[in-house]
Image 1: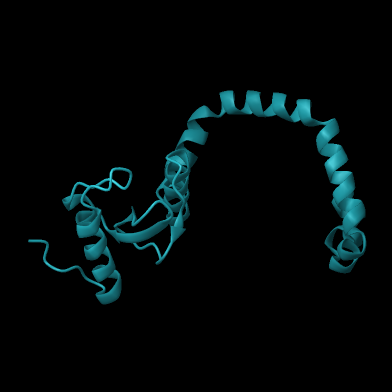
Image 2: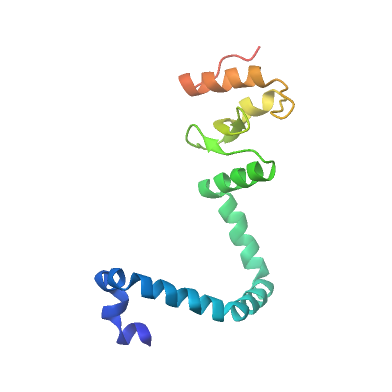
Length: 143
């Protein structure tokens, strides 16, 4: 095996840094030559391992990184930006205070007032509550 016979080259950081350009050009050329072969393999693999891939995706979406990615993709699809102003926490949903910026607030607070950024409906009320949550760590009474 290549790794066993060339351990010094494979695992030597100095070697990698010295030959970084050569390695990158080799990798790029290899990808271009074997592109169709890789596509065919992925097509067969996705059909034969369909249940495993679905289970992996379901598990990933439940993680913190998966939830963030899902929010970013939805925002991109809706042509909104996604610049978070605070950190995600368990039980939070992303609330767009405008078309670019997002504040993570509790799900109950986010869903209690029907709102729309595009139509500017109820945004002043919910933005005030969201900013209050960020400043104090807990929202004010809604009504």
